[in-house]
Image 1 (cartoon, rainbow, N blue to C red):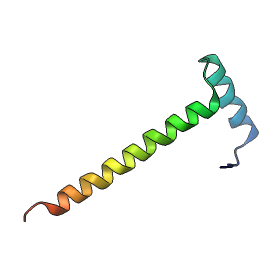
Image 2: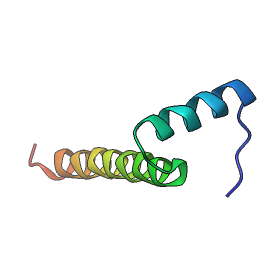
Image 3: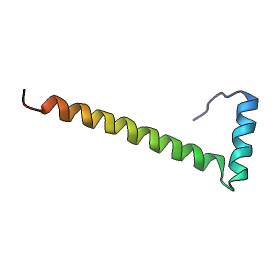
Length: 54
């Protein structure tokens, strides 16, 4: 996967990761997992509500 990010944002992100002794790729993967889990949770909630008797 390739993404385009402004140099200033990339540099600030990498610096923040280094301050926490973390690899930027690991942090991005964590963000992606959280985002996907949140989206799946919203889909699950929608299906649950849709299945409730009216």
